[in-house]
Length: 296
Image (cartoon, rainbow, N blue to C red; front, side, top):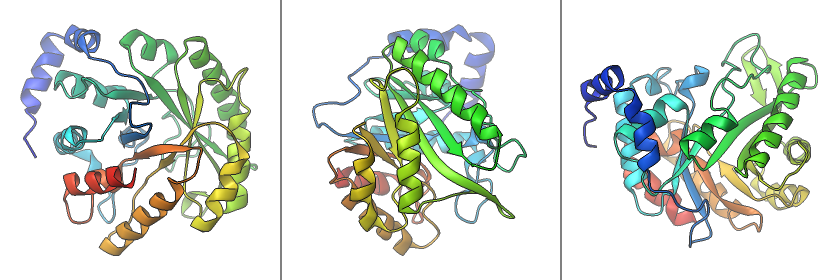
């Protein structure tokens, strides 16, 4: 991986902050879905929610230079369409010139901090629809976790619906990542059973005054054989989400196989994965990304 000159980035930010908007204005754009008809996006919006851990390292994503280097490697690989991240990371990537010809997806709600009492009152503290429009970005993404026993989920549901409306008014795609979840002594846990994922898809698909610009970002169910039935719940286009795939190389192989099977389904257009590709067990970012691209 080529070293990122953090000093140069900081000097530009301190002396010429307008360079970020100028880089955004110069950026070469492309359609959301290219000639392949597939979508491969690398995700890096975890840090803004205070979620920095990968495998056994609770602060793996805290080294910003290292994260940027990994992102630059991933974005340079053939078949990678773009990146999902918060403003601070996308600003760095703009200054590094890494986003030309790429899909740029802004992360919209990061207020539900990992482990916080208000985790499920997930306020929109990231990109606003007007920010994405102003910067010429290509899409937004929001997280929708619903706990039937937590009133904060209603606030998130309402804010999500209004965000869907605001994005549609600007003809900007918005990727909704829905989960049914519950609080446990170890924190909030997402329910990946077939029934729970089915219900979350049904809820997410009906938000807002139109679904014309809504995409789904969905997990693979606990039993991958259930995915065909689960994905019959909606006609919205969908991408699979990744996640932390453990500390054993065999875990990675199992995850890739689950993705491969689900990517055959008619509503599944691609993959949005982060830690599994940026922090693979063997350290080979390029190899992990190439394997994921090969699944498409």
